[in-house]
Image (tube, rainbow, N blue to C red; front, side):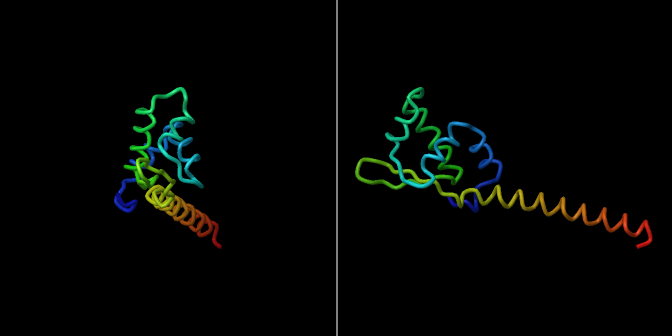
Length: 111
């Protein structure tokens, strides 16, 4: 799934879970197999880790590459684009309101 087609809400939901954030950190710089990732979470079952990987993949935050019998995961930070665009829009709106308030205040003071 292309990051351009993922809703920011879906990305935010994927990022809202601490386990998924830990997984993203583990695959940020290097590819890791599902087995390696599961070993990093001994308190969880392999299917539970796989479910977290599926959520991250569906949100466009990790890419998957088959290699033999393994699936290698790596962070795809382009998947953060929908959230970045959302934050940029929110920030731009706030800045426009602040600019308007300052200009209105200055006009009221006769400047």
